[in-house]
Length: 493
Image (tube, rainbow, N blue to C red; front, top):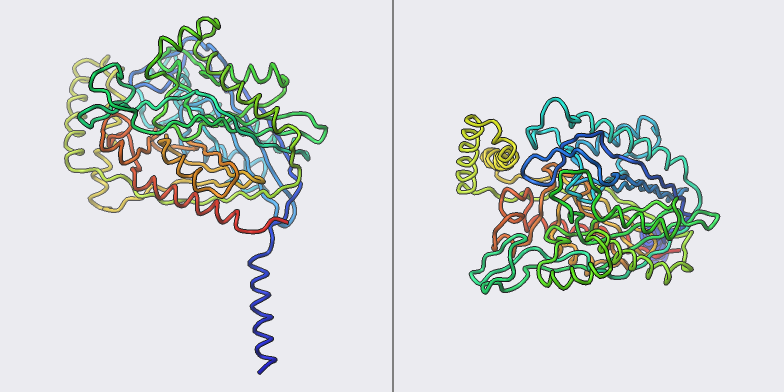
């Protein structure tokens, strides 16, 4: 009997030790590249409902690649690409992965993700009729997509071959680069980027996140090679121009390179900011006065604030470098419940589409202003029709969660309202959590609003703006936090 009990204890102990086996810290390997993805002009740029043809490039558009790897039995890989784009269609992400896999057949291509900085002055990337673009005289979407895939896949392969031992430090500071753009009025309705200087104005609807999260990477010669900057604000200060422009990320990158070295690669990560804008919602005149006294444009002013936050972090953490650390990258397809399209939504959208088609038939030039809006609402019509056969539709989203030492990195494919990002950060076991939005999109960059926003209405929270609604948003938060917890549950050795 005693022998049997001891045997059971030994078995249980072995299982317990196996399950609680510590995670090993490993040497970090780093590769990084920057590539120019500026299109051939003229080109159709996206981010507004009307067609815009850009004749000039006011700044270059950039994609920056970061390859992180550890080796051995517990080794892992992450390939992250920050792109000056409004959104990155999921089918285009797949093409980049395929192109890289052909050149690097031994890697797990699913460990690649791309994020958009959300500039509204970058080329159209969707093939499904976002605008009615002229067939001649402008760069075609299919041609720019081919160029995009070739440039970025080549940069990924180059960065992968550049891998060498290195170290990382993480930091955080603050900068006011974004403001909540959902405006609440006395009658309970909300507006999107609407007026605040009205008697009926009551409050901003949601949160603001002024954190500037940073990562600094050095090679084994102690040379700074790359900086990650995470800001909860889309890059849409110059959003309405008929030009190619990387928005405030261009002066951010240039300012960082001027101080830290021209060869430093800068990755811009947009944190949860679906209801955030860099446009000031009140006290604009006072802010403009200070900016004018500094003799800065609005994008330069935003860059000044962000760079100051980067400097503050660097000065504090530059000597706290980690070369051997825990590095884990979990990828999964997360099914999210789609937002339900009501019969009322369907009938209203169908009526709009019918009327728009009639206007375009009478005046083809009307397509410049109506075509995207018509297609936008036609998608709602098609979603309703699909619901008739599938009353519980799910949206499959690629979720990436990374543990890098004490920090977590987690992704989503939406213009995610800031409250969801704050929920993730508040519940995360990581010391510091980077939320990255717009890491793929099947709908030109779909918003994911809170229930409070849906109740208030307006663009970004109406049915046409969302594939996934508040219920799916909470599923995303809960699963992201669950994966982070799993990555932190084991003791580090």
